[in-house]
Every structure is written in structure tokens, then in C-alpha cells.
Image (tube, rainbow, N blue to C red; front, side, top):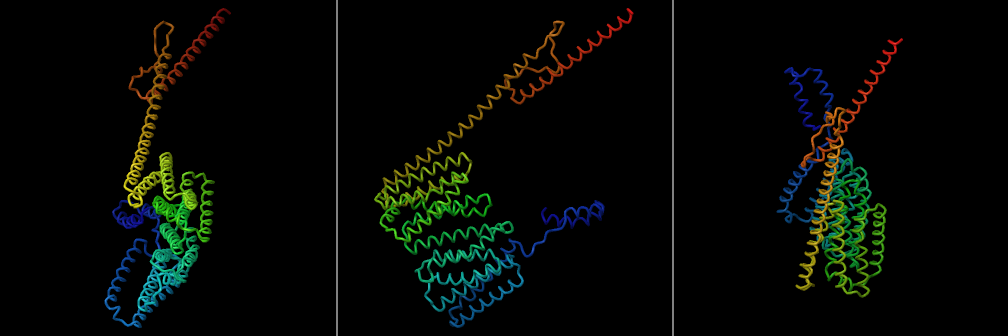
Length: 524
């Protein structure tokens, strides 16, 4: 029951007792029945968001006060302010470790304040002393100093901030240095995986934060993946993206029954596959792949990605998830087409074959979504077609004639699929209506035959009908339910009429036996 209603009831019971509406015994029983109000430690999530908003506004006010005078301070003065901010964050962290329970609301707030203070101080110091390092170096320092705090406080929101910093590292403009290479980012993401696994185990207590953490973790992994491809100029880039997206989607599909926490894996996996669809339809993608030379690092990572996809396909095959299996098969097709381009197939042929594959896959998924009534598959097919149309419109390598032909083929395909869907829907409705009409005619026919058989002729030659067997002839507009009810009444009437005949015959036989006994006694 709602807590506010329970509180209101406890407030009203004394007044009801005073007015004599209920007795003291009944009031005591009501208090015991509705029980006490469950108290929670600390503020609620909504209250925490309001408090964070107030803290953010206060921080912005302080920032604006310092912004106008910041550069008037000497470098040593700026250093002092940054150290004071860090000292305040460390004191708050110590109080949190001493008093705040692990994973509580207070621990979440202290962790976020610590990350914010550390990030602001690092950025201000880099601006003051012009160190010249890229964002990757500063992100490495912040993440290294934040990781122990995450485990000590058990703060999921601090982990989200940690992953957000890693995502900013992967998408920022940079020159890869020794301390800004992708390998450090991968190691830091792997170091946070035990905490993510811990949050998944206790997701029943903090379900919403676990869902948000899943989104952040998957996004950080994809960012690190793109960071790796662009930093080392790897070939087979589209195959790598397709493999990671398909494996992520397969993991989310296999974990669908465990709750909504797997939704980010499916969602980001689908977004990655949409990226593959859009860029795979461009001729320039295949031209660049044909001109690139595959190095040993690309080949080795390609083998690892292939093993990852094969594992996902095997797991989906064992669970007989055919639709998800077709979606996860996308990187295999992309890899084969890339190999064919390297072996002499023209980029135009590779692009056309990939477009044909995407159209066929969309049609199959639309059919599966219609049969299994999964709206997500139907919407995914629609978005796939829209992405292909947008790609054709902005592709400069196609002439106006080729773009027009592509639009025509896509439009005809959309019309054909929708017309087939409408025809199938109408045929199903007609089949259902025909079966219902056939059932109604069958019931009416049985009722008519039953009326003809239940007419009986008495010994006097007069045609009589039993009261239990009497029913009117069925009209043309009588429904099947009324006909079935009338047939039941007739069967009950026949049973009653037969029972009465047996009772009458038994009575006549008894009278004849009594008369014979009387005649024999008179003769004696």
C-alpha cells in the first residue's frame, strides 16, 4: 500500500475514535493490519537528483565568480586553489569511507564530487602550466585515481563518470602518444569489469542504476574499439565494427530473459549494425578497402573477431534463435565481401552484393516479425530501408541516374512488402470468418435434424410433444450459441421423457401383479 495513504490512515484513526465511528479495538486491529511505514536510509532518488541540481547550480555560481578573476591570479595562486579543491574532495572521501555505507546515496554523492573535483583541478592545472599533453594523458591520470574510489565506495554513478571520461578520451581529437595509446584505455575498462559484474549480481536492489551502467559500459567499449581502429589505421575496419556489433547484439539476445539490463547490449549492437549497413552501401568504403593492404595486426585482430562471432552464432544456434542468428551472421558476409574485393572483385560489385544482402535480410526479418508478432523486427526493417535511402541520397559516387534507379528499386520493394503484408492480413481475416460461418451452419443443421427426430406419436394416435422436448424451429438469424443451447435442452427433455415412460411401465406392471394375487386369493 502507498506510504502516504498509510500515514494518512494513522492520522485519521484518533479522530474516528473520538467521533465514535469505530471502537478502540477496531482501530487497534486496523493499525496492526496496515502495519508500519517502511523507512529508508537517506533521501530518495528523486530527492537526490534535486540535491544534485542544487549542487550543480552552486558550483556554476562559484565557477562564474572565479571565471572573471581566474587569469588575474598568479600561477601559484591558481595552484593553491586547485590544491584546496582537491583537499576538500579528499576530506569528503575520508568521511564517506568512515561513515557512509558502501553503495548508499551518500557514497554516490561523495564519489561524484571527488571525480568532479579531480577533473576540474587537472584541467585547470594543464591550462595554467601549458603542459602540452593530449587529453588521453589527463584522462589516464583521472581514471587511475578514480578506480580505487569506485571499489571503496561501491558507487555506480562514479563508475558511470569513470566510463564517460574513457568515452571522451576515445572520441577526442588527439595525437597518439606513449601514455595516450588505446591499450591503456582497454586495461582501465577491463579493470572496471569486476565492479560491473558485482552490480549485475545485485541488480534487484539497484535496477535502474544497473541499466544506466550497462549503457555506459557498452558505449565505452564501442568508443575504445573505434579509437583502436583509427589510431592504428587498421584495415578491415567495417568487419571489426560488424563483429563487435553482432557479438554485442548476440550477448543481449541470449540474456534477454534475465531482465532489462541486457537492453543496452541489444540497442547499441543494433546501432552498430545500422552503421555497418549505411557505410557498407557506399562504394567509397569498398574502394578504400581494396586500396588498403592488410597488415599482420589487422589479420590477427580479424581472427579474434571471427572467433568471437562464431561463439555467438554457436550459442544462438543451440538456443534455436533463428532470427537473431540471421542478424549476427552479418559480419561473416562483410568479411567474405572484403576478401573478394582484395582478390580482384570490383568495389561496385561488392557494394551491389552488400545492398542485395541487406534488402534480402530486411525482407526475411520483416516476415519473421510479422509471423512472431515482434514489432521491434518490423521497425528495424523500416529503419534499415530509411538508412539505405539516406545513404544513396548523400553518396557522391553515384550519378543521378544511378541514384534514381536505387530509389525506384527501394520504393518498389517497400510497396511489394507492404502489399504482401496487407494481402496476408486480409486472407487471415477471411479464413477466420469462413471458419466461424461454417461452424454456425453445422450447428443449425444439427438443430434442424434434432427437431425432426424428437416428434413422438402417442398410443391414441394423437401427435403430442413432450414439454421438455419442445423447441421452436431455428430462425435464419439464430446464432451458433443459441442453437447449441437449444440442442442441450432437447437432450435433457428426451432423458426426462424416457424416465417418465419407464416409471409408467413399472407402475402398470405392479398393478397387474397385485390384481393377479387378489384373484388367486379369492379362488382359494
